[in-house]
Length: 374
Image (cartoon, rainbow, N blue to C red; front, side, top):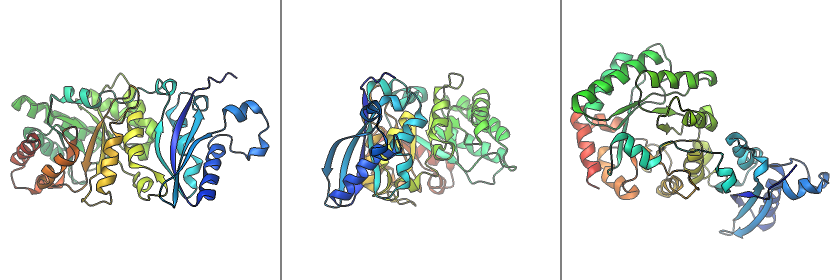
């Protein structure tokens, strides 16, 4: 076996005193690679190449340390699933370890296309050169396909850029997937024809494994302009497969369902920067939906800023993507969000868009006016 000597690095926050934190770093080096005690591995080629390697170990705040640990690119192969396994597989089962960020080598980055569109490409796709993008969700669950299509029509008349399924819409009897997708896509196309707009409909393709691609292809064939998926449910690589599929070639919105517990505790899990920013990008998302600070979830302002930074941090040729704050936002908070995120953001307002006034189309146009004031 030939090893190139090229390595990539993961940075971990390790909670504990110096001795216990260093022991955790040493454990990561073995647990994430050979999964054997040090003394049981006598092959020097494996020890020198397969073992993780502590590159630096730095105190943070008296109760935690930062360890940069490098790994050989050969242990990943060319698979995203194995990369995630190496970064945080077994050690996700141990306390006091948090994956903060990754630094991938050029050879490893070549294996991942990342977002098909990214920020610049999505702006071109939607014909929105400067202002923040606008997004909303079709809800509530329980509406019929025809009712959802009528709602999508009004939202498109109002100029919303991306009209996505609520992530709870799947293939229920009250709005079967194929019926809903066909009707909603047609409704958005009809509104665009009337307004000369460029709104797109993004159906939810989170589904049982064999059906994710089936539903995505059906969506494409029936006029959908984007896709929504929950990689915390389907797996990150399912999203990557959609992003890489030339038959689809559609923008992808990543929804954070089932990922909250990974970022809920500052001493365990994965950082907002890495999970919602870096890993989403490697897996092909063009926009990362997340709960904005001050909404109905627990994310703080610092969490959101870190997440937004992860959406744009340099990663070779992997494109930056749109942070998409959501989760109980109102139109009144758009100026605040503009100030926090700048123009390279997609605002997702659901219920707040409909509660602003009885005139939904006017509410959408007001939403656009607020976004254009940046």
